[in-house]
Length: 266
Image (cartoon, rainbow, N blue to C red; front, side, top):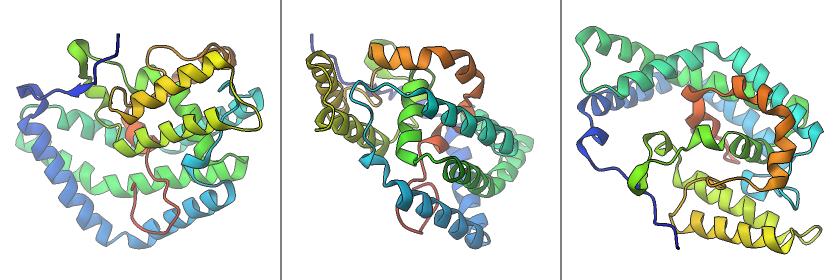
């Protein structure tokens, strides 16, 4: 049976007043703080550009034919995760509070003031986050495409659980169309890799995932189960991966990967 496209919920709980107010406050505060923070933003984008020029863009990444992650590359990924989470405590706390505020139906005056403070600091925290991540990747020899791929296949369940009745779970709403397109292209690269093509069985699975991503049936790949080779390559690291996942910064993880010096988190 063909899977039904995932639909974003349009019920009353999905359009909460508190969420809209918090988002509006965040947007205004981000613009104001951004005006006074252009220098660090340009520096962050330059670091990102250096990374992309050395390792190419995210959609150009080509996984192994079976999608597995080599042990040496997993060790680098884990080292980057440890350094990133250790170096961005304030970012994690700020976005955790903002996410909590935006999930509320109503917020008190005191909560509104706290939200404004967090929103004002959100942009500097984002810059800090991207600087740490990209600097660690540059230092350890991993491109954003490879990091992005490993992050998605390693943390798929935490990133995007599926809700009942075919609705897209609230946890998936941060996954942008761009992220979905990039993952579709990465899987297409894997499928079309002339140097080492996947098996016929895996090729069919890849084609199904690509079709689902391109036609709005899924927003991230392998939601019904990762290929055996991928699971086998990740299995020795599951215990290390779990504590290195941060729910509050999921959206940041999937952003900021443009090959030019411009805005932040595009």
